[in-house]
Image 1 (tube, rainbow, N blue to C red):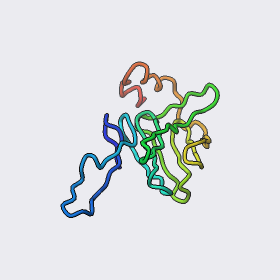
Image 2: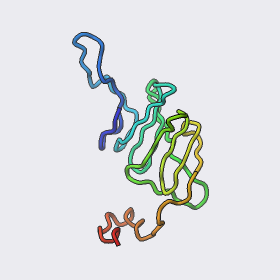
Image 3: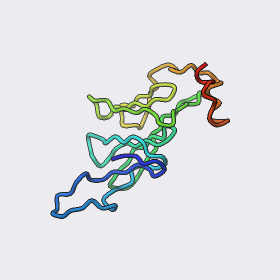
Image 4: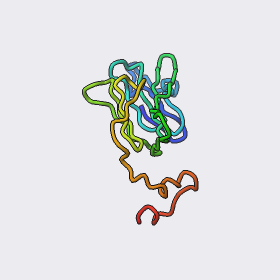
Length: 146
C-alpha cells in the first residue's frame, strides 16, 4: 500500500504464491486519489482501510466495491480548519476504530471516521500573516523565520 504523487493511493500484493507468479499492474486497486500519501489498513477487516491525500483529504475505502468515502473532519461554526499539505494521521494501537488527524487542532474518531471530536485547542500561533501562503503562493522564508 502506498501513495504516489499525482497518481493517488494504491493497494496490491507484495508477492504471489504461484510458480512464476509475477505481480502485475492489474493486481493493484486504487484506494485514494489526488497526491497519494499515507495509507492505513483497517485491522479489523482487510477489505477496508484509510487513505490520505493533499490538504487533509482523508478517505475510507472498500477494496471489494471500489467505494471511497470522505471522512475528513468538519467543524461547526465559523472556524475554518487548516490542514497541512501532508497531514498527520494515526491509528490507535489499542483500538482499531480510533483514528487521529491533525489540523490546527487534533481530531479523534472512535467509530472509524463516521463522527469526529476535536480534542485539543488550536495548537498553532494562529498568525494571519503566515496563513496568507494559500492566497498569495509561497511566502518568503524570512517571513516564517522572524
